[in-house]
Length: 206
Ligand SMILES: Nc1nc2c(ncn2[C@@H]2O[C@H](COP(=O)(O)OP(=O)(O)O)[C@@H](O)[C@H]2O)c(=O)[nH]1
Ligand SMILES: [Mg+2]
Image 1 (cartoon, rainbow, N blue to C red):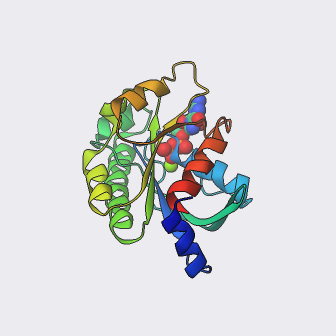
Image 2 (image 1 turned 90 degrees about the vertical axis):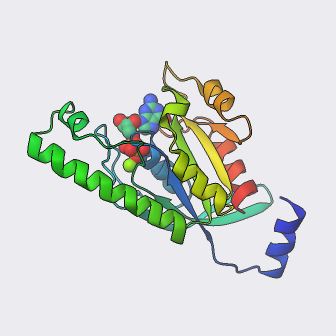
Image 3 (image 1 turned 120 degrees about the horizontal axis):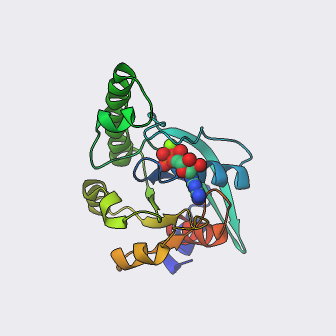
């Protein structure tokens, strides 16, 4: 913990928890990771994971998640946000077996979800966990507008290279693509390396 953070917690011991937003493209594993964090520290589930993109269309939160690291304890409110894609294409939903009408409705819902994510980022969030799927091209997944808003607001940000359990995972490619950012490889599904993520959360958001 940095000296300023220590000073801050000494001066304001009962400070309100920071709200941490889980951001990233659809299907990066945000909901799975949110559930992992919640079940590790709060014993509750946040939402349902899905193979169809844009399942989470409202920000869902779990408040008062207390994470303990050796001598530190950080309390955060975790918000699982709808995926922020670089585009929304209803044809892609049809490829997942949805009817034309259902695909169009889902595209509308996805667009609303992206708006909701951006609103939460501007109004509610004090820190960002940006989740990327390390089995796919990192640069192609990143929404630069979202990163720009987070940077502009001076929000602390941890980049997660998720799905390290997967045979095609290449977390080093994520680190290479973002050399100036802290990148933590994890599997939200198996919990692999979750200690490193909790250390990063305590360091950045504590
Ligand atoms: N192999 C693997 N699959 C994952 C992992 N996390 C999520 N998934 C799968 O990826 C898909 C999307 O997950 P979800 O949590 O709904 O992603 P979200 O759209 O970002 O909320 C689901 O089929 C998950 O089971 C992971 O760490 N490893
Ligand atoms: Mg989700």
